[in-house]
Image (cartoon, rainbow, N blue to C red; front, side):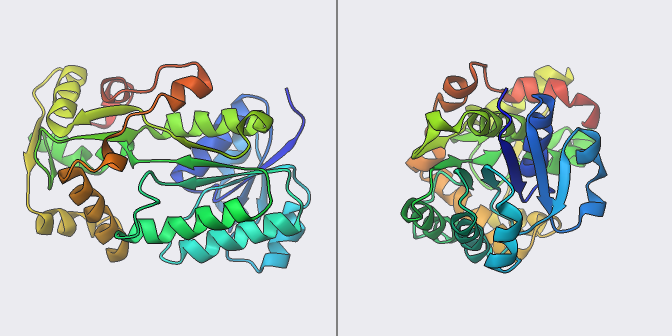
Length: 289
């Protein structure tokens, strides 16, 4: 096992904390970089160290923390200013002479017609020009987003979305994204200059409903609603800019645009494991539904 010191920036979010826990479970020397170290006790319990470090610090402040580490994972934040925050982290990594940096992006990063593309494209460009040994982990829509429909599934055996039920799209389970990142960070010399798109399943909403029905042993149905209705529902859980960005992804799915419908074997190639299908995911978390 490598004794190289790994730091995860953005470690309090879903992807960051799952990756920190996965690395800790693999006995890696991992530190969670967070804005407020008092709020992530579960990461310490999992076996990680915790430091105050976040992408909103000045470049030199952040670099003075990063210089104590070998490898860096930048979990691009769910913040409207995430382009500048992530670029700040990349520049701080340069200043700190980080040996390897892995950055989260999205499959549609090359699409400048959508908000998320305009946010992530400059991050990838900055990374490639940084002179650092880098890797990119592109993540599509999360399988875990179904948790947002848990109450509806419990009470009405139904979940909703703005696209036709037969339109396929790729999703990734957060645990798969975390294991892929951990695998890369434990042996980065094999992953220099590589871009991976981590997908767990290519399926339609109707097929997902069948998987959920099987896992929960009762019929679960997908119901198409309008984009306006979906936006209203999204605004209960995420800010408006992000809701608009998610709706743009749904419109790409509607058109069956390549970035949303291309399944890759990157997860299995990296980890040697089968990805977490919607069926496996729902079996694992059935108690919530």
